[in-house]
Length: 446
Image (cartoon, rainbow, N blue to C red):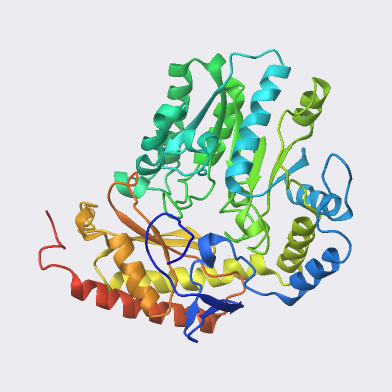
């Protein structure tokens, strides 16, 4: 029996090695990493140039505490990250993961408000459903009941507004009025809470695990920026999953030419080679906080030189291999093939996403958007079938964690057209078996 424990008793084979988009267990079985782990391995596995950069740094130093030394690797990565960010966001704070990035952004926002004499601002409005991390602070802005409800007594849950799921609400996502409709819910909530108490609004530019690659409707991203400016509310972009080039732009928000006040990065930022994340902040915010006693926050491994050397090499691979461009091109191919599967399988109710951040959602009935019966546990069953077939997918409950089933298909950004076809073939095979297992009354109008 393993001494390790995670969420459940689900057993998996032992990993032997990984290279490119493939992974092998110790029996020799090969898997296609169709979800890049948890949308982490953006540049694929075992990239020799990243490994060489890590080895070079290991020969110099593997740890240098940030209060004792500056390091070449951390300074270089900070410079590179700031250059990728919108103008005015030029200060970088390193962390070890996405939850830490979200917590750091929230705490920096709070200290900025205090430094400006706005102690009454503390509320961070978020969306439901949403997912921003597993620590208590990040959970407080997460809208996913199965993950948050057990811990509600231990934290201060923050205000929520509905995520702009136009497809479920029967609205036209291409109509600017739809985006304004959902953005108006944010303004109404700010007014309800009292604008003077609202610190920030946190949003994933392209949805992650909880909404399954949700693309916001037209004008939504621009309008929420205007609303935040009107009421002095900071805008935090959670780019933990959508950042790093996966959507076909380095930051997901670039698709709408919108700049936030704070950006949270992780996952593809380190590419799965080391735990790494970052907050990129407005220069004036950081200077204001530093002028008023400093940022009261930190993590032991923040700015670790080995992690930063790996992260810098990952960014160089994304740039030199044009992996962001490849994500856009292969994303178009994969999205088209997923839509082909939608035509073949009525159980697929929606296909969505940008670049190689893509998902499809299963439904009992497309017309009514009714989900499959929750008792079928479709979100886990299809994943198991695909896994047996050598394809790794990532799934979640769609509707607040209680019902609905979506599946993220997000291979590494190095994927080619031939590999896309192999992914689709395995998915087709898995869907055929899944549909064959469904009870006779599982599909169609309720």
